[in-house]
Length: 365
Ligand SMILES: Cc1ncc(COP(=O)(O)O)c(C=O)c1O
Image 1 (cartoon, helix red, strand yellow):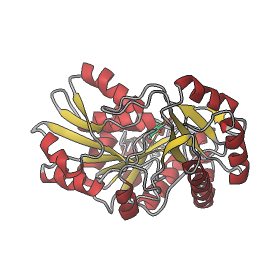
Image 2 (cartoon, helix red, strand yellow):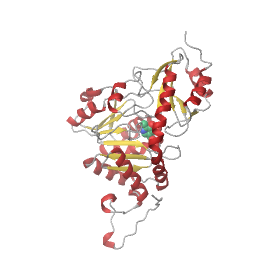
Image 3 (tube, rainbow, N blue to C red):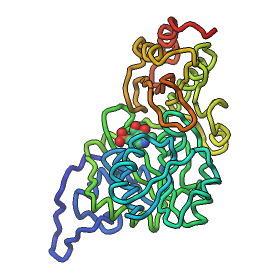
C-alpha cells in the first residue's frame, strides 16, 4: 500500500461532492476521514480484531478521548478502573469534569459487582485488562454482562493484547481501542491509535464525533504501522518468551517481593488471564521487598544499561520505569514498583544486565 497523502479529494461533478465520513461505503470525500493508506490500516486492524470497522486516530490517548466524547454528555456518568492508563484518569478528572461528565473510578477486580455501581445515567464503562502498571486482569465477561443488562456500552483498552491476545468482540465488548504506538508500530517511532467497533450505534457515534473533532491520522505514520503489522506476529511471539524468561528469573530473586506478570499466579486476576487470553506480551512489573527504600529502587533503575529509562512500550528496546506515586486505594508500593518492558534483545543479556543492577541490593534479612 503506497503512502497516499492528501486533504482535497476531487469530484468529477458538483452533484458528486459530499462531505461524508462514511468513506468505506460512500467513497472518498476529504482527507480528515482518511486517505487510502489510513483506511487500509483501519481495515487490517478491523480484520485482526474481528471488528465491523476501525477508526484510525493520532494516538492512543486521542482514541480514549474520542470514545468518551462519543458516548458521554453533560450530566452522564462513566466508570473507569482505578488502574486505567494514567492520562485516561487525568482526562476524566480534568476536561470531562469541566464538561459536566462524572467519571467514577472502580476496583478493577470488582467483576460482576460492577452492577451495583451502574446508575440510570451511566453512559460508558471502561475496562483495561491488564491494568496499567499494576497489571490486574479483569473479569471482562462478567462486567460486560452486567453492563449490557442495563444497556450500557463497554469499551476496552486492548493495547496490551495488541488486539490479538484477547478477542474483544468474542467477549462482547462494544468498542476495543489500541495505542498502535506500541505493538503495531513496534519501533517507538510513531504515535497512532485505533477505535474498533462491533457496529451499529457505536459505529455512528464514533464516526460522527471523529469527524467533529477532526481527528485526522498521518498517512506517513499509517504507512509505518502497516509495515509494523508485517512483523507483529513474530515480534509478539518473541516478546512473550523473553518477558516470561525474565519475569520467571526475577520471581526467584530474593530482593523481589512480587512479580506482576499476567501469566504468573502472583498477578491479581491471573485466573481470568488463563481463561480469556491466548498469550502474554512484553510488559510486567516487579515490586521490591519492603526493606528497600524508594531511593535504592531508583538507583537500581539508574544502574541498568540495556534497559533504558523511558515511557511507553512495545518497541525493540527494553525499558524500565519506577512509579513512585501510584493511586491504588489500600495499596502503598512506597516507590518500590518498577515496570519493565522487554524488547527484542536476548533474554540472557537482559538477565546479565539485571544481575549487575541488582548486585548491590542485598537480600532482605
Ligand atoms: C494502556 C495504554 N493505553 C493508551 C496509551 C496511550 O497511547 P499514546 O501514547 O499513543 O497516546 C498508553 C500509552 O502509554 C497506554 O499504556
